[in-house]
Image 1 (cartoon, rainbow, N blue to C red):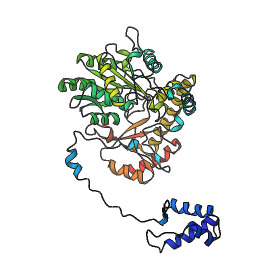
Image 2: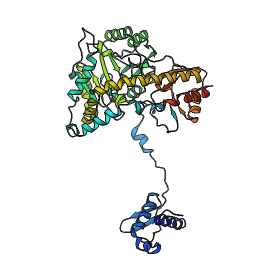
Image 3: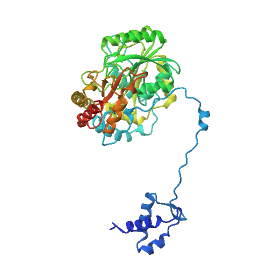
Image 4: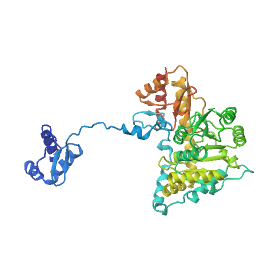
Length: 466
C-alpha cells in the first residue's frame, strides 16, 4: 500500500513517534537499515521526509530526535511605548488596491495592470541584454543614466509648444519609482508641518507620502473634469501654501483629464501665488480615447515639478521614474533623493531605457490602448446591466479604473464585505480621500486579471448593493 520502502519507514516511524515523548531519540541509521532491510540511502530519504514534515530534527554528530513542540509565548513589547512616544503623524493603512487576492476571486480592486497588459517579451529581452552589459557592475551617475535622462526630456519636449523653453536632460533626476519622487518632493518643497494643497479624491500613494513627510494636507475638491479652480484659488489664499499636488492626465481614481482651459487657469493661479504644481503623470501610457498632454510642457518658469513613472507601464519590478524640476528646486530635490537612495539601480535603468527605445514599444502601446478600451467598455456595460446603482461618474478617456458613485443610503462597508464573501473584491472609495469622503464611491479596476469575469463580478456587486 506504500509507493516505496522509504514511505513504509516513514509510516512506521510516525506511528512510533505518536506515543514517544518529545525529544526522544530515533534509532541510529545503522539500526534502521538492519530493521527494514534497506539501504542507507532509503533510510536517509525517509528521515528527510520526516524532517520536512516537521516531525523530527537532526543534530549533527548526535542523532535524530522527535521534534519538541515549543509553546509560543507572547512577547512583551510594552517598553517600546515609552521609547517611541506618540507618532508625529498617522500612516494610512494599506489600501485595498495593494492587498493580495486569492486566485479564485474576481479582483476589481487591483492597483496594477494585469500581466497580459505588460510588454513581457520586451522586458525579458531587455533584462538579458542588461545582464551582459556594464550596467550589471558599474555604479550609475547619481542623477541617472544620461541616455535615460535624455529620453524623458525628449518625450516632454515633443509636446512642448513653440515659445516655451523645453526641459533639458540635465534637469531630469532618475528616481526609484514615483512614490519615492512624491516623498522627496513633498519633503523638499513643503517640509514637515507645511501646507500642501491636494486634489480630493486623489491617488492614495500621495496621501501616504504626505503622511510620511508630515505635511499638512489641504483638500481641494476635484471631480471627473479636474479640480475646482475657484476652490483652488481660495485654498491658496487661506492656507498660504506654496505647492499643489495633482494628476492632470487620467487621474486616479476619477479618471479626470484636464482641458487646456483648466490647465492654463491652474498654471496662472500657481504662478500668481509663487507656488509649485507637483504633477504626477503615472498614467501617461494609459490613454484610451485621448492622449496625455503634461502641464509641464506648458511651463518654462520652473513652477511645475513633473514626475513621470514607468513602473506600471513596464512592470512592478522596474521601479524607475523621471522627475523634471528646474532651478534651485531641482538641486534641493536631487540632494534629498540622493540621501534617500543615493542612486537608482543601473540594471533597472538600462532595462527601462532598452524597452522604451525599441520600435516594438510603440506597437505595444497601440495594442495596450485597444485592450484597455475593450476592458473599460465591458466593465461599464456589465455595471449598467447588473449593478445600476454603481454607475461610473463618467467614462474616463484613459487610466485603469472606473469611479462609481453609490446612493447615500447604501451601507458601503457591508456591500464590500458581502461582495468579498461572494468572491468579488472591490475597493471602497473612502481610501482615496485625504479628508472625509464627499460621498459613497467605489473604485473598480478594469486592468486587473480575468476580464471575462467582469459580468459575474458586476452581478455579485449588484446583489450586494440591492
